[in-house]
Image (cartoon, rainbow, N blue to C red):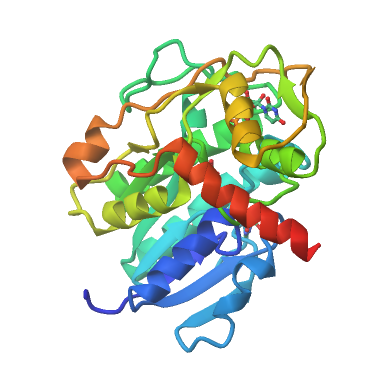
Length: 316
Ligand code: NAD
Ligand code: UDP
Ligand code: UDP
């Protein structure tokens, strides 16, 4: 096992952050989990309370933070459109001021810093599938801009701190990821469909349901995070992390209905403004630079996620 490191995880009480904390603790590291609990929950990390290598700090990344660490994973930011549009100004601040503070911290301590960027930097893409070299098509003034442009500006800051201050950076562009510990109320498509199917409510497809997404299972993604952080300093990214399997929302709804045995009917609701029509990653760079590719197919991942929501709903 590699030497133990002191690792800061911002957004550590969220869906992906809490899974990353688990992985880092299992690998023998000291974990400082930072979260303001906007969309995160104590239940995601409660099993780590009392562990001698785990610490929790309630803190907002838009505020400066002085700690001594070896690595920083910057995940703090609401990820679901419904959540990030509640307070769009705060969403932009979280991405931009959060990036500045984490980069300032990395500059002072010499820590490596990882940024959870997103496929949303490609906007509603005119190039399909999307390689890292594509600059994207984002509406800068639409309702999704607080998230997309915040993340784009964070990438700019990462590369400028790297060029200007030699900060060691690792930028991952994450495509739609699902799995246990997604918030049942956060409005993302996989959690919505599963909860609707399990509770016998109508499955809400927005628009005609022919828009596509690529869904990556969370275990695969976390493996990609670790490989990127552990890669040589020359590997800065941005690197796409996602599952190239591409599905329409109709196909996803049908799979969820079949796997849950639900009697829920499909209904259609209006398509949100600026909803991207298609999205699929090119993962050649992740394959060549990190030796990474997803292993869990959609059906297997959905079964595990359905089991999680089943037990969460049973707890009430
Ligand atoms: P999540 O909402 O479950 O987790 C985000 C966490 O950040 C939450 O615990 C929340 O409370 C915390 N947070 C939000 N604002 C904060 C602030 N100002 N200060 C401190 N903590 C704050 O979402 P997730 O799916 O786990 O996403 C984690 C990261 O990955 C996000 O940065 C997101 O943009 C990125 N990402 C996720 C996906 C995906 O499909 N899940 C795709 C692309 C990018
Ligand atoms: N910062 C922080 N922790 C540190 C060092 C810096 O939170 O350990 C914050 C600091 O508040 C500053 C930001 O990171 O606003 C950017 O730091 P940098 O050193 O780049 O900028 P400067 O302090 O020169 O404005
Ligand atoms: N979507 C849907 N029904 C829902 C929630 C979302 O049809 O109940 C659609 C949404 O319009 C989008 C896709 O599913 O086309 C993925 O939405 P999500 O919010 O999960 O992620 P993002 O749009 O950020 O990729």
